[in-house]
Image (cartoon, rainbow over all chains, first blue to last red; front, side, top):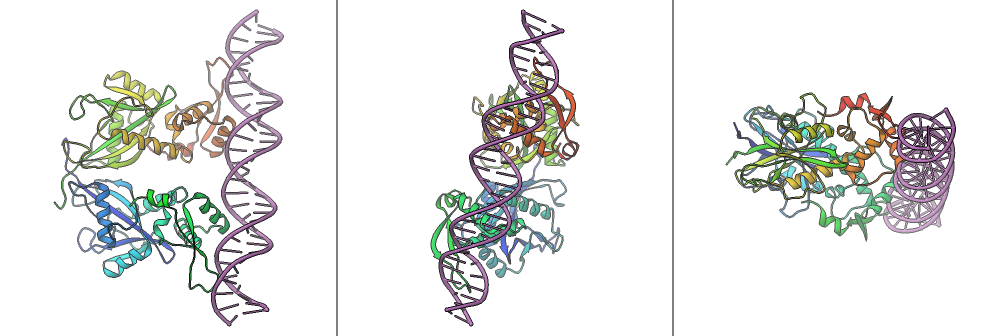
Amino acid sequence: MSHPPFAVTVDLVLMTIADGRLSVLLQRRSEEPFADRLALPGGFVGIEETLGDAARRIVIGKAGLAAGASAWLEQLYTFGDPQRDPRMRTVSVAHFALLPHAVLARAVLSRSDLALVPVTDLGEPLAFDHATIIAAAHERLKGKLDYSPVAFALLPDLFTLRDLQSVHEAITGKTLNKPAFRRRMLDTGWIERTGQRESDTPFRPAELYKISVQVADGRAG
Amino acid sequence: MSHPPFAVTVDLVLMTIADGRLSVLLQRRSEEPFADRLALPGGFVGIEETLGDAARRIVIGKAGLAAGASAWLEQLYTFGDPQRDPRMRTVSVAHFALLPHAVLARAVLSRSDLALVPVTDLGEPLAFDHATIIAAAHERLKGKLDYSPVAFALLPDLFTLRDLQSVHEAITGKTLNKPAFRRRMLDTGWIERTGQRESDTPFRPAELYKISVQVADGRAG
DNA sequence: ACACTTATATCTTGACTGAATATAAGTCTA
DNA sequence: TAGACTTATATTCAGTCAAGATATAAGTGT
């Protein structure tokens, strides 16, 4: 038993903001084990494939994401309990990815086995240890929010400061002070004004912002 | 190729403070590949073994640590590049562990293939991608220092505030303001005074502190 | 023109940090 | 044993920063 054989998989916590709540893409299983349970999208890592490449492949396949589309993708944690998969010894390298709502909404509409579920209210027991993985992803996201430009992956290219604040509030579950939030975001240097304003509002339209170039260049995906 | 066979290993970044510098335990390899290079201690994960159990097994074996001895042990990141091991496809779940200097110093004395090397000055190229793993461990440690009671794993049970400050300075590479550091540490509630004082000093001895119970109960290892 | 909603600017307050100072508690030397 | 010396500990003060509250501006609809 000098080097016993393992199966290595990646599981993906694909998150977005749906109806103002941080939600995760889940897939209903059709096969045993855990048939009919909701599970994270995932798959085996190819023998010549990087862990990151395997994760990107799943994102593209499940989310129907164009190969070059922007997304935040990051390795999360590795789950390797001997009992976690009753079929064989499986080690899963969990990743989390962030996408704008429009991308995942389209995926859910096109496939009946997919669902977007709020992370704080999954509603039913999940397959494997996937509830634990989702909780870990949520924690990681909360922790990175203040010192990493991670939230922009959940927004379209142009967004208002109100949109950005809504994203932060959905992730943390706390309401934030508006002027303080605005100041903090502008001070980070992560965003740039565009001079454009939102339209079709029944009140004063807010200015549209975009991610600053150096941040957009530096991020994952 | 529905589930190709992988070898799964754990590699350990065993760190301590030696001569005032954050240092890592390395082992000189006797076999190819990378014969004569320094490498992180590691090993294959047993087929019925948890990832954490495998990591603890390596710590106990390499550091000669008694099974119950306190140590900070935490999963770091998983490295799975197809080219990282020329022999076979290997996925390594890297962990980092923190130990008091006395424990690792004993291990180094007892075995000629072990060495304690400062993390910021490794001195020679390492085997595999181990230099990258060490850099990641150092970054993680720096990031957790302020909001997690991680530094105490590097100290004996009783320590002075000066000792604690030295540990923080060795990890961050920055000199800290003494009264501010003292205030900050006392405010965390992580430590308790003992009423005892250090001995054998050529000047006024400082008070000895210990980790507060709730912190000691909650930590890893 | 006016009411309404949100955006933006300004002001005040409290918390925290760093530096400086004063005092206490030991050791060492004469 | 007295006094110099070194470090530990306590206290104070000023500067910085961020959050909250408030006031004003800007745009839309009636």
